[in-house]
Image 1 (cartoon, rainbow, N blue to C red):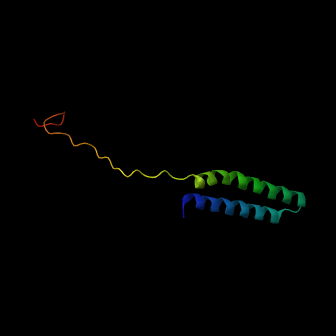
Image 2 (tube, rainbow, N blue to C red):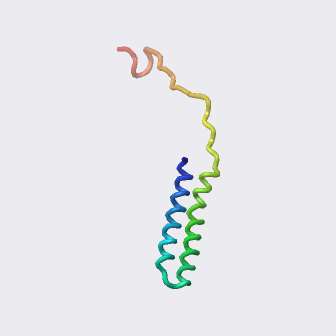
Image 3 (spheres, helix red, strand yellow):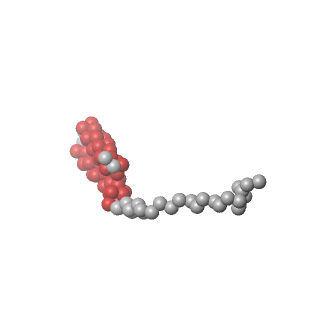
Length: 81
């Protein structure tokens, strides 16, 4: 499972769990409605960056591997003494 999907699942689970706990313990209907609307707003706001990450396609890796050049003997600072 990719990190983006895992983050999305965790965000949804945390927000829904917190909203359910709060709604269950509130006595007034107006408070329950406010909590549900707030939870939806937080969910949408938190998922926007995750969706952007999931939608962006990763750039393909280059097929070429460039190795550093081997220094020639006798030249440069690391030559024979």
